[in-house]
Image (cartoon, rainbow, N blue to C red; front, side, top):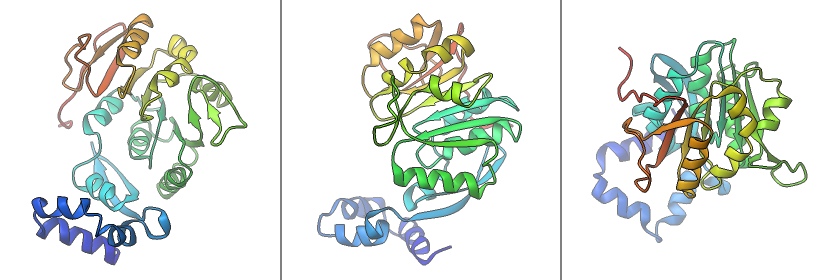
Length: 260
């Protein structure tokens, strides 16, 4: 473990949150935080061992994210839902993969005969995603794509604009079991760019709702999906959750605890 990681863990253990939070927001301490967390202008990545649902892997991310991944897990209910719909040998698509925690969980779920396609728009984060895939020996069954997922392709943009449907065709995917979408805004565009795949494969879906809540809900319902919130309650129009969980033709079941 690096010296910075040891210092960070010591601060978390010894300094009360009521003190840490103001320090984290202080403009006077910003140069110190940047030196510690973002040397050279990019976040330092810290690699930790992770165990989730009986799956083990290593994960490198900025200190805060790495600590959460190791001690509590990231997006646990979302990951459990994805695991429950990712059979051995299955195929998963992670749109907005970030450093790849969810992708690694799905890769462990589908196993070496499965496929995971991970799409990330940020060049720096994409490098971290690719590093995590390689560090876990998952290159043969996990494809990392640097691109901005939406409703249309544009190879000339930076990063390249891609669609889920085009990626499915380019990778000759014969089935898709789950799609996770978390792109901080244009989730509706991603769904439009995946329309062919949804009609053909009817994958389970998790989509973050940051805007276009009602339009996204109507899009999925019109495509034959039933939607629930993180507690497994059927979504009601106007009471929009942070994430929609959807399966085709029936209400999904959300598992709130680990498997026994």
